[in-house]
Amino acid sequence: MGRLLSVNVGLPRDVTWQGKTVHTGIWKTPVETPSMVRRLNVDGDGQGDLAGHGGERRAVFVYQMGSYRYWQDHLGRNDFVYGQFGENFTVDGLSDAEVFIGDRYRIGRALFEVTQPRVTCYRLGIRMNEPEMAALVVKHGRPGFYFRVLEEGEVAAGDEITRVVTGPERMSVSEIDALLYKPGHPRGQLERALRIPTLSVGWRRSLEALLTQEREGGVTTGNAGLTASGPPLAWRGFRPLRVSRKVRESGNVISLLLEPTDGQPIATALPGQFVVLRLAPAASPALVRSYSLSGEPGATSYRVSIKREAYGAAGSYVDDELKVGDIVPTSAARGNFTLVPGDTPVVLLSAGIGVTPVLAMLHVLATEASAREIWWLHGTRNGREHPFAEETRKLLNSLSHHHSYICYSSPDPEDRPHVDFDAPGRLNMQLIGEMNIPRNGDFYICGPITFMDDLTAGLKALGVAPDRTHTEIFGAGPSTTPGITASPRRPPHLPASAPDSGPMVSFTRSGLNVRWGSSFRSLLELAEACDVPVRFACRTGVCHTCETGLVAGTIGYRPEPIDAPADGNVLICCAQPSGDVVIDL
Image (cartoon, rainbow, N blue to C red; front, side, top):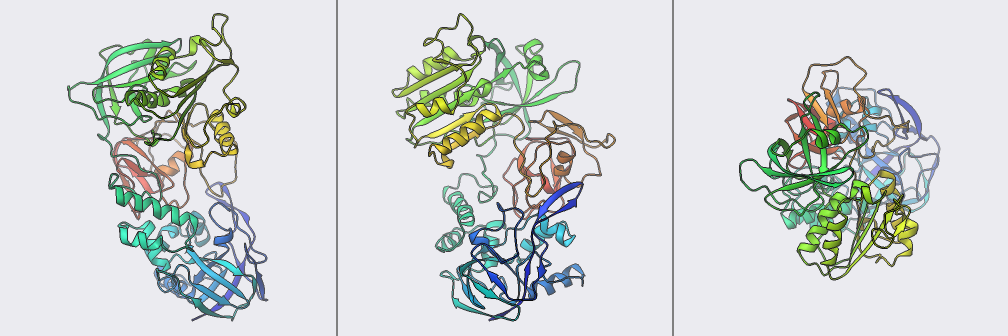
């Protein structure tokens, strides 16, 4: 069937790459003597990023000499050595087209089971000195695969490889890899793959998401197996909406009611979604900002509620300069922080201006006269800074099963305990843990980052399932940069290089406008140069980790992504702007 040509191991090391320090275990070297293979590893081996590599179902990575020869020819190279692709086992035979998920192989004294293709990342490109390598192995159907160790034992170069069990559905490694990453995702193939009990948990969840996407047929663009996609956008770019009303909700919050200028309906937004506004102060450049919709979603108008921060340019402009009748270019509603239909209890938790998206959810629940158990938990500073207090009371009183708890961290003397608020102090997990909140509910959390992080961790500790906890971040979200050594986070800024004259790139959540320059290969690299928080894994258009909302503008790709993002989104790792663009980062 095959032969083990080399056993390769290596411990994680730090390497310098593009001015960053990357912690990686992709450098492997051959072992000359027999090696003990254990449940989680080959002796002497290690992984730098355990979130993406390693673990029981990814204990041993296998790559084939046939693929070595293929890449030597394709790339025009002759410098490969065993371990070149970060593999533990270099083998003769066992091509990705002939190995099935669930196959079992005897090698030496150990028994192995095939669990999944390899999920390639940018570190393969670093090791190969070929930046697009993570995409190439998928495009060419040569990913390699992982073993899990069923029986520990010694193996050595020269051992024969014998298949002792054939995978139950006879689906090859290359078929499964293409099913997730390449366009198409046929329903029959997805159902067949999900009948394989040995398929790893991560791949199973991705394929289940794709199957749901295929069955429901609602979202027809994007790859649900790689990233969550919202409903189709009602329009692209910005649409002119007129300010029909300005309402002061509290001492520091103003609501804008926005209506179409052409009298045509606007699409009903989902409760919890946000829009992007392009504000135009008279004496400064345009400001592009994201705001959650705070009113009852409807087809005639949108309501956004904006807090005036001490040094916030957008809030000051809205409060001081923007007038009824002014035109505000507005994006279509977008976002996945939305109310999940069903009959489970709903727990709405907010702090400060984080109240806005959960208030939209409360409006919908009240409009529907929902019979669900509803919990409204909110924290703010005092009565002067408590927007929508009377509005929420009326909405809650219209619901048959509701609970409310309000915390004021610094109440004024005139604030009435048990009338205006329930308790002094901050809304936190200690208080929440003392309430009889149903653990089987859906929890929606919005507020400052620390508030959301603390509540998310606390709810998990209380036994709330992670998929029942939903969060919305107003500003720039946390970075996902696997392997990059952590460094102090800097606020977003203009790049250190000289100003360029290319298209304007606006990062809405970071409040930054910057010119594109030819020194950048992608929008991801531009964002990194500005310390805008980003997410990535492959950096070549495969994994969709970097998929981000494209609010306005057009882009081009180099290289082309393997599967296109959802309509209205962009893969920033391989995208370049064709003109001015607005990005939800």
